[in-house]
View (cartoon, rainbow, N blue to C red):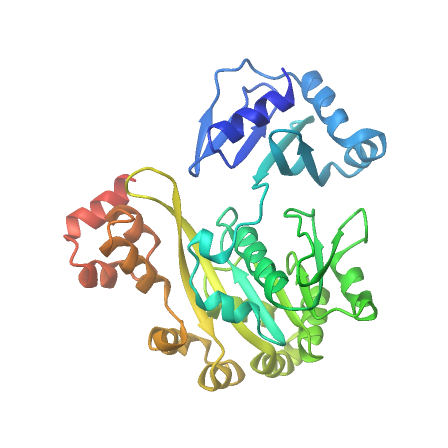
Length: 363
């Protein structure tokens, strides 16, 4: 069985991920649902042979030693894939995530127009958050592309691995990959100031040092984009503060109150007509009132300011879900399941309680 054949099939069925494990047939995630293919079960030997071709000699040795490996893989005719190889039950296994061959624009993706304004901010920190597989990388790529189209800037991305390739347009774009071009996010950030950047993309905020260096970069006049696996703005801010020692947390809150410009939280839902997925957003823009709440440790009150900030492009997730449901884009089942306050959402959307709750219970 050829890996290239499986990846071409993944593209053909518009799937997002290919999963390969010994003793099981290949499986694919299509519209967020795992589906088994009709191919035969894969042996550990077959997987080792596939992965040796993907990694080459040096990276295969790294995989054997570390038991984990992230990399990008390009298949002519099928495109680019973000790959995680690992060991499972003492056998090699892997996940191949499909990356669109072209960076789509904010308009093409149907993202909120306010993201264009956020992308062109002169400085500060912009965070895109949400669960795994919710489209954070795609949203960030569209925002970086907007910078590239409209600003004569030097953009430095630090990624693990590089996903979307940005061709220089109005901006000059430098893309660095963890493991190939630098040892870690923190290492790259420690030296990035000497590379004369205007905009910095940090693929993920993974540890205290990376978060601290990103905050410092935002303080010193750079625009910093990054991601976190958090569900909303309040949780994002609290997570960033909580990684620091208690005696430093007040200082970090004060720094975030000054440097944080926006938190864009998103999730993906199935379209009601079954034609694909659609994103739902919570968007927080750092107004003076929001900065005060961050500084005063009152993140639990952010929700009301976000809810009332529609004229600035802000919205809560429930407001966006209500819009999608009212326009017939998503079902009651999926909207209620993702709502932060399901009972209030059911009331506002005028959904029968048995319709929303019953659907969720069986969905």
